Structure formats: structure tokens, C-alpha cells
Length: 217
Image 1 (spheres, rainbow, N blue to C red):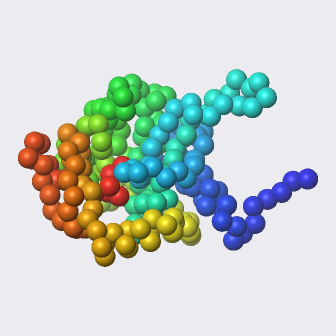
Image 2: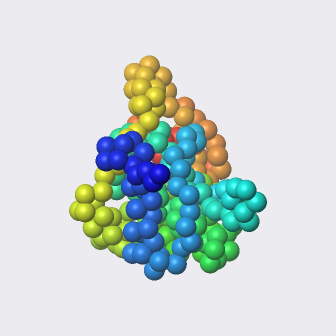
Image 3: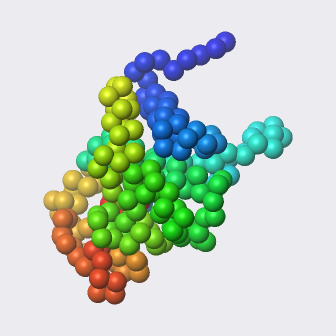
């Protein structure tokens, strides 16, 4: 008996993300990307990740499928546009896996950075203008009036919304703001430091701003 996901079901979040993947595939990648399974996974220090051939078909099927994961623990305090930019960021890895040459050991190389620029997400180790375009640990910022910004505006104008975020992360972050310090990491050398939330720390090795765990991708 055929079943459908009813309106209001929390599982519609996956339907929404799958629809966003298809939309960005058409608008930003010319519809060239193969399907991928989108999951919600908690991974410390990451807004999301891409993993090639993470799934395989059951019952002897030879089919393989890549995974794009988003971390619901980092949804709190971020806009839908910010969260969807992480989806597009991982889709750039998906593109490179199938049509380019990925860097070794998850290194974000120039080919990936060029693709990010093409879709309107500027790669940056700091998440701000002036950061390095390539590196082991990378994030990005949205280019104003760029392809992603325009596409996402259209998507959100159609009523697409993300409805859920991880509750325990919100509670733990509130507690950290009140009583503790935040871990900061250099995106270039991996040096760690602890300071109050919102502190501006610069690594002496690479002279780049250190980022707190929720700010890394």
C-alpha cells in the first residue's frame, strides 16, 4: 500500500532538503550532478560533510550512492540561507568527485575553490573576505548577488523553509555562553585555544583568525 509523508510530519525536512538539492542542481550545476542521499548527522566542528560511495544497494544490488550530510547541531542561530549554503558547499564536493579531481585526504584544492566561486560561494579559511581559498579545513561566505544568492532567494520565495534544529546543541551552547569558554581552532595549522564566546583570536603561525567549532565547515 502506497504511503506518503503527510504535511506537518517532521520527516518532511528530508523532503525539503532533497528538493533543495534538485533545485540547486538545476540552477547551479546545470543538472549534471548524480543523485545523493542527504542525511542529518551530528559531527563536532562541522556544518556538514560529503562522503563518496557511503551507501550501497541492498539484496545484492551493485548500486552505490554518495552521502551529503548536514549537522543539525549547527542550525541554531543560522538562517535557512546559511544552512542551504552548506548544502551547496557539499554539492561542490559532489561535483568534483564525479567530474574533477578531489584533493588528497579531504584537502580543498584550487579546482574545488574555482567551482565554489562559479556557484557564488567564496571559499575562505576564515569565512570572510581575505581568507585563504584552499586548505584542509575550509568554510565560505555567500557572494552578494551571486548565483547561489539569486537561486536561494528564488527557492525561499517559493515558501521553502527548514523547520527543525537540534535542541541539545541549543541548550549546551546557552550553558557555554553562561558558564564556560569556547574552543577556537586555526583553520590552517589546527592550533587550539580557549576563550570567551565572541573573542577575536589570531593564530601566530598563519596570521589568520581562529574560528570556534560551530563556525567551521
